[in-house]
View 1 (cartoon, rainbow, N blue to C red):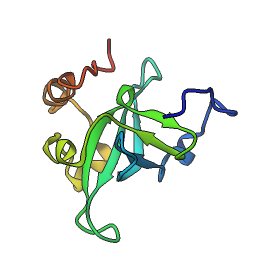
View 2: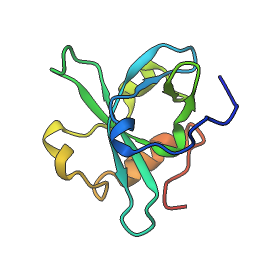
View 3: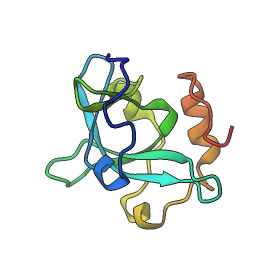
Length: 124
């Protein structure tokens, strides 16, 4: 994985959407559908990752803590420390919730799952 600083360190949210997400081996897991930003601090809390499905049908959605993603310039993708089988076990978001999703009901489940990968919650 590339560790050099990107030429352009900031990116508009609309350019993050659609970016591939890969595992540590470089295998594509999905893509970022959106980002969830904490209103008060302005910090990005989660990347909403679409996973699986075919041509947008049957995809599953996961709130992956932003802290879990590392951008790799060479792959032009975000790398996460999860495999496909790990991601299949991660807490999901129903597609009907995407436009108004909040982590209030699933915050502890998400925090607990990603703690096993050494990833802390966004509010700390």
